[in-house]
Image (cartoon, rainbow, N blue to C red; front, side):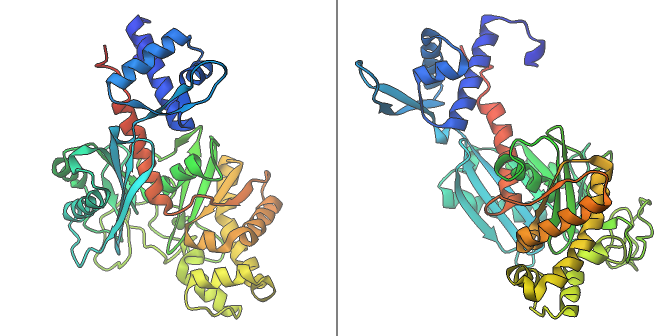
Length: 408
């Protein structure tokens, strides 16, 4: 690792090159003088650095900036095509794949219908090929792949332990994908990727500690502590749907790792029947729709019910009050144990509830918890799982492409 290497001139060049590249990615085109100002490098050192990076095809002159009495200063930027990455969101209804260049600009996004096929390698390969064609980028030019899936991902092996929605995703799939794509592949829990996107682009930007509550067809939780995802020993951190809460039967079997029983229609690798008890029985989409209908908010789907109530609180206020109370059970539990300071509502239901729902949850949690977290709505635009996957892939690719291990 760099931290254990002696402070040789070569190492200093590597560190300076990487600092300049990261700066150009964050702030866009800069002059030699501006790079020197931000990094503390002299004009001579900055010039040598830019020459090295130009020779490696990582930066180029993209324009000029008028200065004082002298000639215009050249503007340098990272060459977008120096590397590409792929991010994917895999779900029961299809695969959405995106391709981004090294600057983070998404150059293509496609969705592929599985058409009854559930073989993971074929599904992913098909989506990646389609995205590459749309982006006009050869698959061989992709430097990293990150795939988001529902379910529990083993933090040791990187394989999906089990996902009810994706029964074909199991141990061995990761190795098969790496063999097929011949590139680094990472599988990550979808809600964790939403949290990564939230920290990179959303309301939790540069916030080291926060929790993201995913409210959608089902529910999930991701926790960021000290800027790092907390996964738990077995990868089960965040499976908040099984939290025992008032008003719902206990999720019996939640502490048991066991094979799926044939008689249980919905279960995980721990033998946990989903939606039969626990927090998920109160805040899953079916439960939310039923609650809305009890309050006279009768739109056909849970998302439409929540959106309608948030848009017209005179009609849907009582429903939002009850829904906020249910959601607050989980938020309060997380807040009491972790005190994250910020809780972000995401997923289609979280977005639909918006600020009216967030304010209600914040008020309830503040009354029953020793600390009062801020409850905010996600500010990530587009598909948060896909954007998180692409960001995670970019981090990997930049570490590889921006490395100057082979530079002179």
